[in-house]
Amino acid sequence: MDVVVVGGGPAGRALARACAARGLVTTVVDPNPGRSWRATYAAWVDELPDDAPVAVATSRARAWTTAEHVLARGYAVLDNERLRSLPDEVRVVAGRVVSWTGSAATLADGRVLRGRVVDASGVVGGGAAQTAVGVVVPAGRAVPFVGADEALIMDWRRPPAATTADPSFLYAIPVSADGVLLEETSLARRPGLPLRELRLRLHARLAVHGIPVPVDEERVRIALDGRARDGAFGAAAGWVHPATGYSVAVALRRAPVVAEALAAGRPVVRSAAERAVRALRSRGLAALLALPPDDVPEFFDGFFRLPDRAQRAYLGGHDDLRGTVEAMVRLFGSASWGMRGRLAFPVRSAKSARTPG
Ligand SMILES: Cc1cc2nc3c(=O)[nH]c(=O)nc-3n(C[C@H](O)[C@H](O)[C@H](O)COP(=O)(O)OP(=O)(O)OC[C@H]3O[C@@H](n4cnc5c(N)ncnc54)[C@H](O)[C@@H]3O)c2cc1C
Image (cartoon, rainbow, N blue to C red; front, side):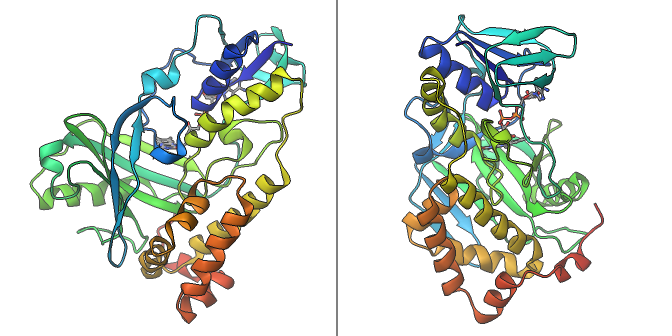
C-alpha cells in the first residue's frame, strides 16, 4: 500500500526516504515544502545512523557544571540540505492535512490522498519549552568559549548580565570550517524563558571578549511536553527528549524500522517500553522545572559524573527502559540529601524568582 507522510520536517522526510528505499509509493504533504530550514540540527555522533548527513563533527565534547567535564563523545551538526532532500520517486504535495484515517488524508482544499497515513506533523500542545538565541561567529573569535575539534554542550557559569534568576547556559558548536554557533539556552521552563532575556545574556558574553554581535540570529523554541500520538513519527510521537529538546537522531534511527513495518503491513505503535521511558522522562522534567536555579549546575554535575553508559542511555535510549531507570536511580543516589528531597518532591517554589513569560 502507498504511504502518505503528513509533515515534511526532518522526521517526515527521513521516513519518506526510508519508505521510498523499500519501494513504497510515498507522498509527503506539507504546507510549505519548499521552505528552507534555518535551525541548526545536532546530535551525538554515536546516536546517529551510519548514513546520517553529517556536516561537521567533533571528536569530543565539554560541559561546565560546577566543574569541568571532558566527554569522550563525538558531536555532529547535520547538513540541512541533505536532511531535507528527497529522492525523485517521492511525491511532494503542498497542502495542509485537516483530517485523516489510517488509509486516507484529507487536505484543507478538499483533495484526498490515499495510503497508509503517518503523522509526522510535529509537536502539538505542551507548556514547558526550551528556548535559545544563537549567533554564528568566526571560529577564531569563539576561542574563549570552545576549542578546536570540540563541542561545548553546556556551560552553566553565570552570564555577565541577567535580569532574572532563571538558569541558562552557553552552547558552542562548530557549524562549518570557520563558523561557530554560540547559543544562550534555557533548558526547560514553563513557559519558555523569553528570547529577549537570552539575547541580553548572549550579547553580554560576547561583549566581555569584544566580539561584535552578528546581525543574523537563530531563535529556538522547542515544546518539551507536547502530546505523544500513537502511530506518529518524530516529534509528533513524543520523541522530543524533555531534558535536551532533541528528537532528530531518534527519527533518523527509527526511519528504516518504521518503513519496514509499513512495508510489511504491520501497525506502527509505541511499545510499552517507549511509553514507560516517556513517563519517566516527564517525571525528570517536572523535577528539573522545580529545581531552584542555583541547584541546576549541581544537578548536571551529578549527571556528567554518571558512568558513560548511563549518560548515553538516559540521553539517547527513547525505549531503553532499563538504562533510563538505572541512570535515574544512580543520579538520585549520588545526589546530596537536599537535592534528593527536591528531586523526589518537586515543588514550584523556584518559580517565584522567575520572570513572567
Ligand atoms: C531552532 C531549533 C533548533 C533545534 N535543534 C535541534 C537539534 O540540534 N537536535 C535535535 O535533535 N532537535 C533539535 N530541535 C528540536 C526538534 O528536533 C525539531 O523541532 C525537529 O524539527 C522535529 O522534527 P519533526 O520532523 O518531528 O517535526 P517538525 O520539524 O516540526 O516538522 C513537522 C512538519 O509538519 C508540518 N505540518 C504541521 N501540521 C501539518 C498538517 N496539518 N498538514 C501537513 N503538514 C503539517 C509542519 O509545517 C512541519 O514542516 C530544534 C528545534 C528548533 C526549533
